[in-house]
Image (cartoon, rainbow, N blue to C red; front, side, top):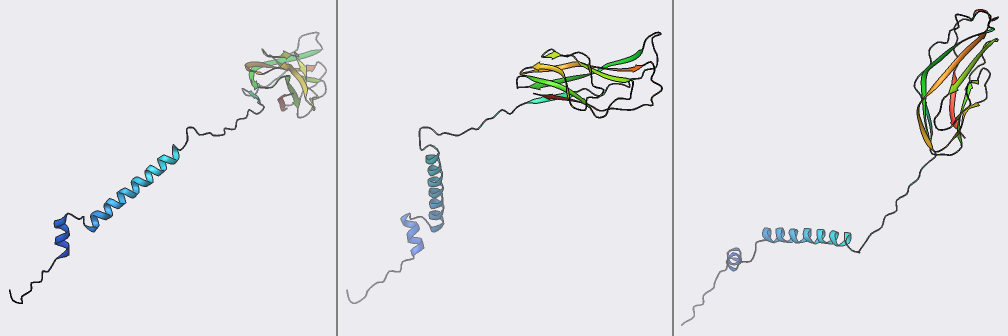
Length: 188
């Protein structure tokens, strides 16, 4: 057989396909899928790496002292007198208050922003189902708070009536319309 040699030319791409070797694109997709699977399994393993986990939960209950009123009383106008009486008065019991506290030995105190005119008085009476009402308390000159309800424990008291009484001596002359600010405070 003389001197003829045959060279065989091989086309690499076609031979690789014939052999079933995956193409580069297929290999990249396969490697990407394996990488993602590894990442997810690692995360799952970290999340479940022990039998239990612990957390610290911080809690706190602060002192609660809330009081609200339902609005303002109507005008207190003395316009009539009982013959032979030295004092004329008018009442308003149209407002209510509610309170909530988680403390013991609380009380409601009242104060006024400026004194009442000479010969007049302003009284306030807070009804209560959770403490001791001190009845009609004169707040005419209560620049410093005065007690109106005492002995309130941990509780809430809802829709309790507030009664204001305005009284004038028979000798008091005409007084033009004025306003006063009464402050009710829930305190210890």
